Amino acid sequence: GYKMGNVVALGGGFDIESAHRWKLAQYLDSLTKKEHPNFLLLPSGFGTYGEAELERHFALGCDVDVLLISRDSEQEVARKIRRADIIYMPGGNSTIPIAMFRKRECDKYLREAWEETETVLSGKCAGAMFWFEESYDNDAAFDGFEFIHPLGFIPYCMCPHFDSPEWMPFENIAHTRKLSSIAIDNGAAICFLGDKREIFTVSGKEKVYLFDAKQNYRKIDLTQDAAALAAL
Image 1: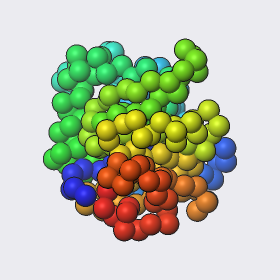
Image 2: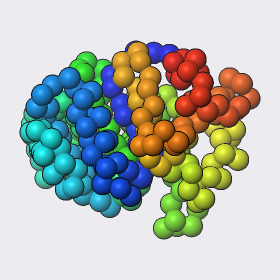
Image 3: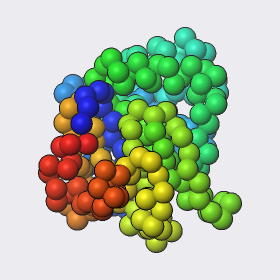
Image 4: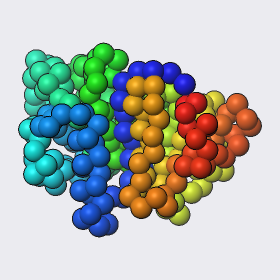
C-alpha cells in the first residue's frame, strides 16, 4: 500500500434508485468531515453534465461550483480546485480530453489536490477512469475496446461496469496488463483514503475485484478479503 490523497472511484450505476444517489452523495460529503463542504463538478465536456449531482449536494448543504475546462482561465481553474473539498467527474463518453486538461494545467492542480490536501477526488465510470494509471475502455462507438492512460494517480488498471455483459470480457484480458487491475461493479466504489482502503456499495451485494499481477492475475474479491483490500 501507499499513502497519498483521497480518491473514490465509482464503477457506474447509482442512478437506478433515488435512494442510492442520495446515499452516495451523503457518503462523499461525510468524507470531508465538514458541515458545508465545497463541491466542485468537473464535467469532461462529453456525455452527462451532472446537474443532478450539483442539486443533490446543494440540498445536503454544500456550496457548489462547476469547472468549465474549455472556458475557465488557468487562474480560475487553480482557484476552484484549491477551494474544493470534493471534486466530482461524472460519466459519459470516455474520450477523456486529457490534452485539454493539460493545456489548461488542470492536471497540475488536480495532482496538487491529490498529493497535498484532503480533497476527495471522485468520479463515476468514465469519470472514475480519470484517476488511474490505466483504464479499460469498452467503447461501443467504435465497436471494440482500448486501454487509455489518464492522470495516473492510482497505480492500477481500472475497469468500470464490471457486472455488465459488455464489460465482463475484461476478465479474459486482465492478464495482458503489466499492472494489477481493479474491476468495479455498478453500484460499488473503491475508496483510497490516505492510507485507508474502503469499499462503498449501495446494497452490500456489489463487488470489487483485484486481478493481482503478483499472483499470476488471480481474481480476488476485495469485498471478502480485508487483507488484500488493505494492501492496495
